[in-house]
Image 1: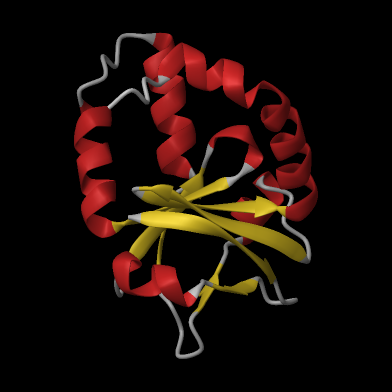
Image 2: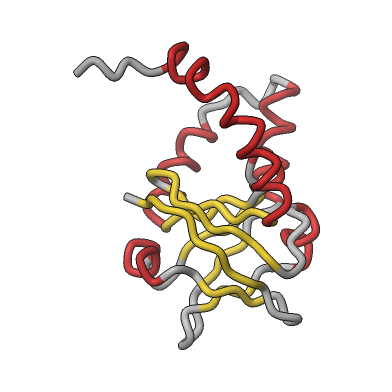
Length: 143
């Protein structure tokens, strides 16, 4: 399981260090694609294959299903780490997520997300204010 928040930078060639705690679980090859909220989603191969199977069941006759799968798959790139534990992020993905220099890498259960530091801070501040309301509406912590 991926969890935690890490701050890193992207070099001029588009390379960014993946936190050591995430490397083993990501494995030798993984997929980076456009995510929600202007971030990138990073999936280990086994998680990507499960997601791909779910998305294949969407009805291609529905406009929203076609739009979502196009958006999601057209941005996907198979990736791997170099010897220094870095991933090279494609220019189109860097542009989508507005990744310039400083970024934030977070673990979100079955995936890793890569955020522009500024967008993450803005998103976090907005979400922090309503965290209790959001949790109350979707999560039952009474175990």
